[in-house]
Amino acid sequence: MSDLSCNSSPEPPRGRRSQQDADHGDQDDQSLYNDGKGIQFSVQFTPLPPPVKAGEKRRKNAKAKPINALMYIHEENSFMNFITLCLTKFKRVELPAALHGGRLVNTPLDMKYTIPHTPLHDIELQSKEDFAEMIEQVTNTAKAAVKVFIDEIKLETEDNDEDDDDEATIVASAAAKKKKETLPEELEQAELIDQLSILYKCEDRSCKFNICWVSEAGQHLHLTHQHLRAWAAAIQDATNDSNLETPPNMKMFDPPSSRNSDNSADATILAKRHLTTNHNSSTSSPQVVVNFDGLAEILSGLHGNGQHTSTGSSRGPGPNHTLTPTNNPATRRALPPKISLEEFCLRYALSQAIHTKLTKLAITGPHALRFVSNDVLMNDGTFAVGELADVRDAEQRWAQDGFH
Image (cartoon, rainbow, N blue to C red; front, side, top):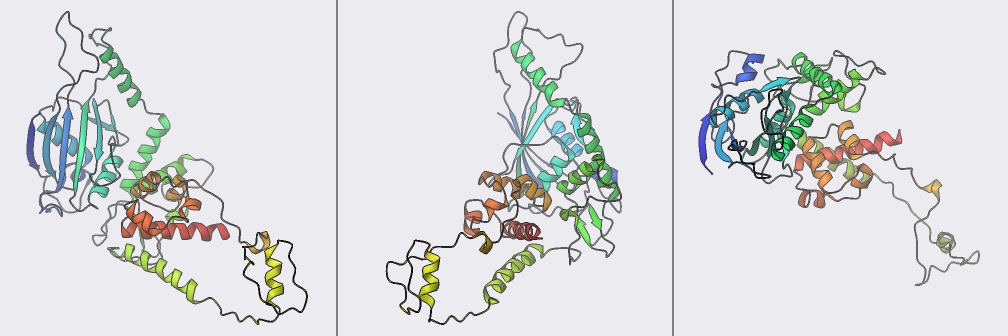
């Protein structure tokens, strides 16, 4: 196994980033990570096994020796530029790489990534959206480092002269063909996402996000991949009025009540609001004064065990009296209807990282989440403070929406 190392820098900027700039990166802008060198990529490339000699058969499950490279790449590099840098480093520039609707097509590469010390392991890396999500997640870690695994796969071609009895080749070709078959609806949705990304590219230099929906009041809503996917799906659905100019009528598209240009204190604001809500609910409860006279009769009525206290008795409950909560439906507030975890995260704009962490904790939805303490989420679920604030805020919104 050989090890390679390089520091790859993108091209210089030319004013506001154009689409061409996005495909090549900005060289003069120093990276914010790893002392200006960029995000650390540990890339492992596994080529196809060498062709078999005449008269021989390939050993089943045979694999070539992987090649490793350490690369530092600026966070503004595009997906295609990243692929080009990798193929150049591994001296395999002859391999074709093309995007259609933002996804790789007719490309003999199977790519996945893992971010160390996070639940993100073996995540698919096959589209511009996957790459953008990876960059967003890795830049939120302390070391800004990610591992990428690239496997060369064999594409099925009309002039394939390989031995049809070569079991390994047949299996690889079938898997590659199945992987590259994309439904027309998926291609249409990917194209809509591309159009939305270009149409709502933020031109406000003071905003740290690339894609924003700006309300009439001038408030910026960051359009994540979840927003774009939901918007594109709504456009495809002919039963609503969504189009490229009108987002779907979903809570995740509601403009924030107050948002400054850099949004740097969002997590703190959410955490303080959740803490204040809990404090107010505990301190604003009215004080109730109960006279002792007749208390025994009231308590005996709650037991439901057939024991009665004579009217007018002032004797309090004895040591064998046990208070149990009432099951009278009239005294209990109805809970909101259950929704799935995926719908919960999509409706309240929770990130993919939060969805992954909740899934690993076997949380099936907000109805189960309300029984999980903050300590469990932070210790067992490795939630950051901002993620915890987002989850509790979404949980509170779900409860409020169910009561309206």
